[in-house]
Image (cartoon, rainbow, N blue to C red; front, side, top):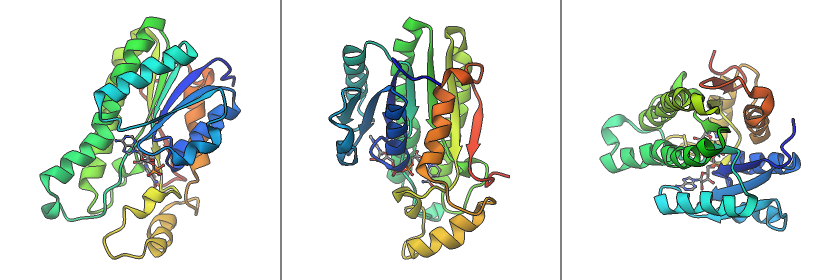
Length: 249
Ligand SMILES: NC(=O)c1ccc[n+]([C@@H]2O[C@H](COP(=O)([O-])OP(=O)(O)OC[C@H]3O[C@@H](n4cnc5c(N)ncnc54)[C@H](O)[C@@H]3O)[C@@H](O)[C@H]2O)c1
């Protein structure tokens, strides 16, 4: 797998899976553009000429346009987009979810994915090639109570991915969705109910639900993202890849 001369935009780059993906793609000699609301965790990469970072809200259309424009100005082209940015939902009964909270979760997980994919399509169609990987969640097939907005938003990401894969296949652009299982990042603790002990829940609820017996590591997800972006996956589009230690069975 060679990523030399390839340029990949990674959203959510400052978080657990995002940072691991940036690190792996840089090791593979890709040019990487890392975008996040907070980029403090990415300072270690800042001195590398193959790395560019953007701090800002990806729900802002102008920020998204700016990122794609600056990427092309700097690296000349865009070969891949990985949508990792997203938010969790604290387990809450549906009658306690406000409309604002509902919109926030749908926007952060689905609308943000729409905005970056729309921009990627403009650039990738011009070159008649490209690969997009959207991150969903195993909860789309194995939901947990109280996560209705989160699960709904990630189900939308899966359907959107399939629709876009079909739409963009005449332009040789691959679009796939990867559903992670419970992963050992900051976000996992945010799915717990208010007042629950995060570490106890991580072990008793999440870890014990994975048939392979352990939480996913961000690097497990990064390796599979790398595969979906690679030329080895050239005939894979509209697919759902479960990287979940068997949780979706
Ligand atoms: N951790 C898990 O157990 C798990 C399981 C299944 C799916 N996922 C999904 O995997 C993805 C990554 O999760 P993670 O565990 O690395 O989470 P994380 O919280 O460590 O990272 C998410 C990143 O997204 C960024 N982000 C959120 N909203 C943004 C916005 N509007 N603009 C720019 N950046 C924004 C955050 O700042 C954060 O750095 C998410 O989409 C999540 O829903 C996570």
